[in-house]
Every structure is written in C-alpha cells, then in structure tokens.
Amino acid sequence: MIKSIPLRLAGLALAVAFVGNAKAADATGAGASFVYPVMSKWSAEYAKSTGKKVNYQSIGSGGGIAQIKAATVDFGSSDAPLKPDELAKFGLAQFPSVIGGVVPVINVPGVASGALKLDGATLASIFLGKVTRWNDPAIAALNGGVQLPDAKITVVHRSDGSGTTFNFVNYLSKVSADWKGQVGEGTAVKWPTGIGGKGNEGVVAYVKQIKGAIGYVELSFALQNKMAYARLRNAAGKFVLPSDETFQAAAANADWKNAQDFYLVMTNAPGENSWPITATNFILMYKQPKNAAGAKNARDFFTWAYANGDASAKALDYVPLPDALVQQVQAYWSQNMKY
Image (cartoon, rainbow, N blue to C red):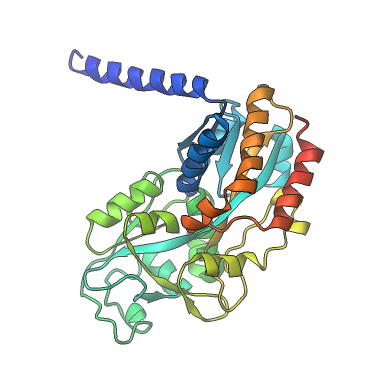
C-alpha cells in the first residue's frame, strides 16, 4: 500500500495539470487520434495568430463521442460519423473537418514501403488470422518479384474505441463476406487475432517493435514515423499508393449535398485513382451548449482553420475540405448552432 502512494500522487498531479490546462484554454476538445497531427498544428498556429488557446486530447473517437455527450468538452472529434437520429437524441450537430486515409503499415524485413501489394480479401484474411505467414500463396500471388520472407505475421489493431478502426473494418466488411459475417464493423470489434495498441500512436509503437507486424494507422502517422506501408487494390481494380492525390480522388465522389448531418462514409469509393480507405474526420458540438462561450470559441477556431489551415493540412498529407463543402458547413452552422 505504501509503495502505491507515489503512484497515486503522480496520477493526481497529472489530473490536476490537465484540469488546469483545460481551464486555461479558450476551447477544449477531445477524440480521434487520426486527426491529432493536424489538430495540434492548427492549434499552435491559431494561438500564434489570435492569442486564443485550443486544448485537444487525442483519446480515440470513442472517447471523443463519450466526452461530448457528457458535455465535458466544447467539441468532440470522431472518424465514425454519428447517425442523424443519435445526433438528435443528444442535441448534437456534426460537420467534417478534414479528409485523410487509413493505411496498412508493415514491418517486413527486406520489403520497402509501397512494394507490397494487397487486395481487400487478402487483407481481411490476414486480420481474420487465416493468412499467417508473409510468404503465404495468397500474398505471393499479388507480389511477383517481391522477396517475401517465411516469417510469422503479427496483427496489430486498436484497443480503444476508434474511428480509424471504424473506417478500416467498414472497408473490410465491404470487400470480404467472411469479415462481414464473422466480425462486422463498428468503432470497436471482437478481433479474431492480434494485439491491441491504444490510439494510432500505440499501433505505430507495436508495429515498429515487432518484426513481421502489420497494423493500420492514418497516413500522417506512417510518414512521421518513417514506416513502410502497402499498396491496395481499389474498387476499380488498380493498385494505388496512399497520398493526398488518391484521397482527393476518393473524396471527389462523395455526395455531401444529400448527406443529412454530413453522415457519409467514403470507403471503397469508385474511381481509378481512389484510395480505398479514405476517411473523414467529424466534429461534434451541441446545438444549445451549456458553455456557450467555449462553444463559440470552438466554432471560431474551425472558422479560422477552414480559412487558414489548408497549407498545414496538406503538409501533413490530409485533404482540406473543398470550398463548396466549407460553404455547406457554414450554412449548416447558421441553421443549427445559434451562437
């Protein structure tokens, strides 16, 4: 018991520090780790430009949804959009912030980034635990000329409720009947195999540590951590690399005008150059918030980001929202968020 006291005090100090930081901020948000790199950059640039502070915690989409529902933050962030009936139940509004992509990251000795090709069925079989070695015939058939080692595959997945997971397993459910029937989709699923890491950060750490590992993260995390990633065969049958161009190609097919409360999932999009696991980050805010000042400050932050944050988003390999979609979001704000 005595040994646990310093640990408890340390935990209490961290909690107090967080509360202090939150109180010092003009607006607080929490949620998807998918968008953390660009949210962090925007927050720093916004503070420099306006003097106002936005505190954003990377806790996963599930945590972001829980915190906004509990009204402990001014905005939540999720890569899994909430359906209109759930938004209505909690008095929430929802709008997109930025577009990115989920990529399979690998640690396979001798296989360079972009050299490995996978299709949806084979990727699903790996995460189902049916394909267990890197030189399996299913992988070899897609990768003529690539030296594949006779090495064990270790699957790494998210351990927390995650919008990155939502988009990844939504894609697998679209391309694999086995995955859809045995596992399905959601922000959290019962994984058939593998080890779990918390946040994109946790998946990155495990994949980098374990030879033969495969996981899935947002592209920015893969690039920042110099990780190898795979090509994927898209809905048009073309093998493509993840990039802002292939994310943009997928996003070009999105029908936002007919998406109530912006509820739209763009995985496995049509188009010869479309990345098949392109995803949108969504912001959740109250239509009638308890903390009107904090909510207004959060809305001001996103107004600034839409006007001034495109260059930072592109530098981190996200796709900024097109002007027409920004105008649609601003009209939505006027109709639903009276502050």
